[in-house]
Length: 262
Image (tube, rainbow, N blue to C red; front, side):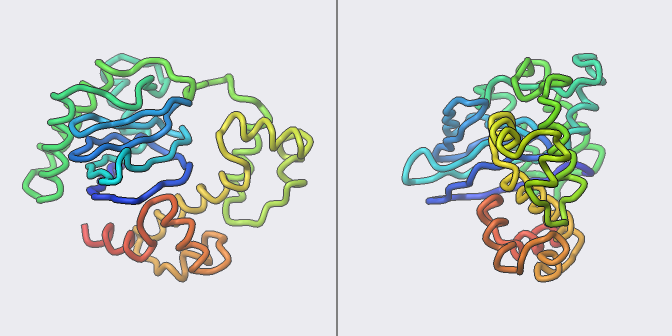
């Protein structure tokens, strides 16, 4: 399904550094417990709970115990969720927000797990999986959406917005602090302070995440990791490997093989 990516993982001793997703992340914990920070709060998702983050919200992730955790995740392009919300009449062109990073909804959890397993096993028709995804997204939005501080339409600091846009435009180019501060129309000192406070990451860390997201797209298209490193502005493949694994939990080579074998 276009705009939908799935992950099934069992992790122990893994600690994801602070990062964000361009779209929504929605999953269910099968065993163990996942701990992460969401909207400034420490959250723990035990087995059977639904865990999630909204686009752009900086978060981390690690096991809540030495045993780690196993989970099934859906990574959804924002337009997939927004389209469903629009069909429900729940929002007027405003992306739905979710105040809770951990949701205790057994029906939603079972729907997520069941669809995810059937997608993994390849035992559904396109019509069936689209219908089931629509149903579970509808329940999620109707029962659990609300205001979050990450959905700040029109209220984001103007300088931060300009800096983010500039970094996106120049994602593959070396950007200096002077250039970025000029684009943001802020002093370098003020830019670093307001950017880190608003985004949860320093400008250079945000740039790395944008490059990793670009790398994911290229790897999915079948481009070799060594070439992806060059095309995404990393110094070399080892530089790409280090940041890619820190954020996604797998190396570029493993990720590329997984998505191309789908």
